[in-house]
Length: 380
Image (tube, rainbow, N blue to C red; front, side, top):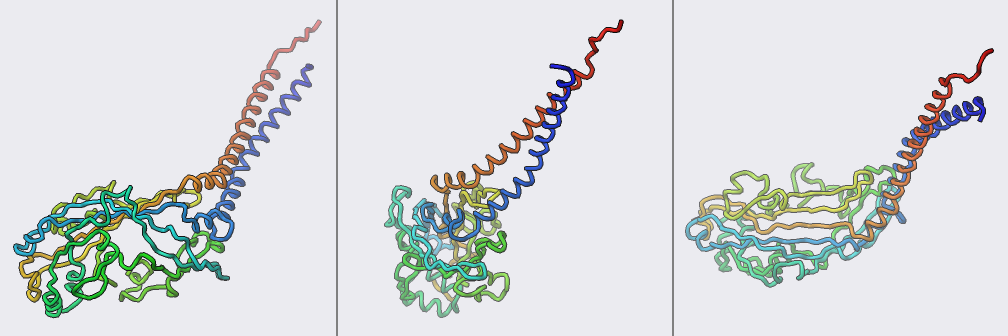
């Protein structure tokens, strides 16, 4: 090849390589914009999006695991004011959220309303025992009237019904309800739950602002609650009953909480809350929501059964671990619809940059070699 043609070819290759590498670099912000637009499109709650399909699906199993505390020394607590000695037993596992949302209705202000049916199915294979296992636990009614009523009236109710501070109940009764002899009504830590509904909820679809997607706009037609004399507390976060919530085993709790009972062993790995979120889309891949249900009792001159009690005690009744992991089918759809597209685009960008830089560097080196090579012409 003549020298002039070789130089022209190398110059062309150098320029072409530079252009390809620059094109790959330009595609990075363009690609990021495309990815962002795709993510916004697929995470909006509207028919046909990946987020809506996942939101309405009940294929992703959600479980509630319960650990209950059994009182080993109820007589000593009553007669001597001893600290309760507790032994934890669990999990007793139930599948929840197996019934689809109903009455899904879209509105013109970028919100969607729905009703959430509630139910729980016992899973024997994932449990340490049956629903008929019996526990000695705090009497919910006694602890309730202790916190809510005048103690003279509370004492009359307790004595007239023959109630005491502790009671023997099955797992099923403690969780889902039993007929209390003192109050004459049904009590249970999670009563009522089965065959009930929650809502209606109204949440933002994210169509106008992706940052608001699935944020609650109202519950039961109200933008806030009315149980508390405080604006922050009246946000739709909880309810005005004598139940105290904490992390399991009083993780991160004060010494007073830990010293009130014997047998707790807080552990970060087992008792903390975690949430695994895909950083680009914001989709929740798995989570564990762990909470402990407690009630208060303490000394009282007017309530006879509490005359020997020495200290106020926040008593742990049970703790719950609500978990869900993205199922394989949804995970595969997630990878196909979003992750694979992002990987393909990123691979194309990197490929252009690498090919362009290699072509640019090799042609530039060749051009330098050709230009610096001594001439073979001989002068006479």
